[in-house]
Length: 455
Ligand code: ADP
Ligand code: ASP
Ligand code: MG
Image (cartoon, rainbow, N blue to C red):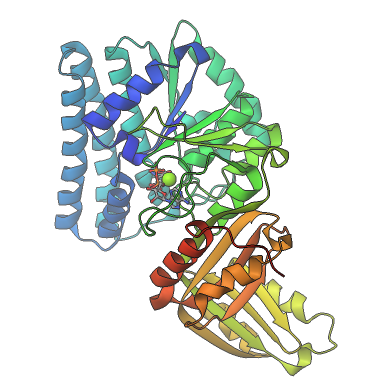
């Protein structure tokens, strides 16, 4: 059971979360928690302030971090003075250690990736510590597991890639040992360690991925992702009106939605679940009686359009070269350049003398553009957005392309790509048009009566 930032944001949210876990003890849950809402952002700000030697700001932010967690521990453990004292002491110890590191970084004005990973992992360590105490105070005997003993990743401090063999070997042993005499165990999402025992993190939003890896490692019956919406919807309800709940979707559809911008799941969450065919349920901790969304094997899901996802800030890189015509190594050379700079490409479309690709708007592309420019003309279009219509076999459904592009009469479409997997039709529009495009498209696909099918 994974609980995201909003599900552990404050006293009320944590009380609800503990109640939800308490109702499932017969299923022996492994509870995975994120940092309290916005705390990871705060830790990023602390590292930035320290790196720029801004002592005043660093101390002010560290004070906010400590106060929020100490107050929360006091509030949750009001009725259990002994546990409250222990919890506050533990929170202070964690904050003291963090402050020691941050002040060293601030004195030098140098922040290594290794230290940054240590700093930003404190959100999960603090939240899981406090919630563990609070669960025990509610009579749920809960053991604390340090994820760094079992979530083993590659060396990369800030984007550790999980090493499945290590995780599968360690998690079952550690979890069953921790369960002895207990009702539940709790651990952290997002954080791990490399084989040298150094702190790593899985990348932003990585707690979903942690939960799914742990589920895979213990052969869980189900993986539950508890968040702040009634499951996966036809679009992001924060950006699109009249979205609808999706009762069930396939692993493939969910992976595609997440890869193409739906923040509700970390893009890699589906992979471990698929390996062991474990269903994932996306549920609302603020409305636990809602059925949420089941993410299941492909065969159990019907064909048809399920959602509109989008990435708001992307760039299109257009590469023109007459040398591309009849030259076999051209594409290889282009993609080697992207790969060497670790810039990941989303959509690709090619014509005889042109390749267009999309990349995330925050990727650093100067080096890639310089290298491509040595043998091609390169034009970069900034301020674009990528919109994806996703659903099983939609590419093969009659009339789907017409349905997708009919509402876009007025705006420029820069690139169109339909996934080889038949699950995805994506295109690029101007960023300023995004809100209207997504709303119109959603209206057309999900709020209109079915039209008779046409080619
Ligand atoms: P958590 O902190 O629980 O991990 P996130 O903020 O990462 O929560 O993810 C939940 C959010 O994902 C929702 O509040 C919603 O705005 C957003 N979201 C984006 N696309 C979708 C979608 N298709 N269905 C549901 N939620 C979505
Ligand atoms: N706390 C981490 C983040 O905010 C991981 C997560 O919430 O999934 O990115
Ligand atoms: Mg999330």
